[in-house]
Image 1 (cartoon, rainbow, N blue to C red):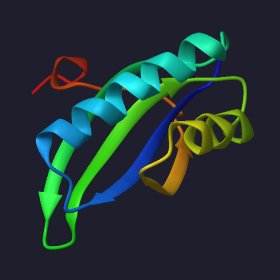
Image 2: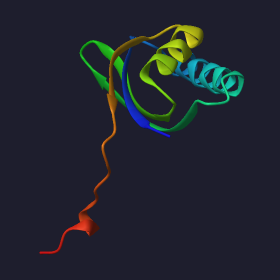
Image 3: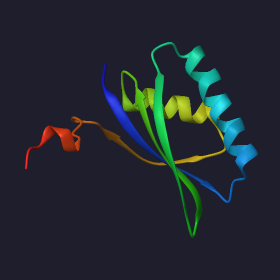
Length: 92
């Protein structure tokens, strides 16, 4: 199944609000059996909180449906993941 990186914005969200959104994301993924949340990186900048989340899903449209059901965030961009690399993949 394809994997995607979703860039999301939450504005000036509090930690409790972020936890509620994460729980809601899991609940919605349970309803949509073909969507699986792998992991996320959460960052802060001058606009507030953003996350970069890795999901498995059959399509970008399905991820947008998931996002609409979760609510309380904005999807800025969805990228299909072409592959993964790590430092151990390269020799010096």
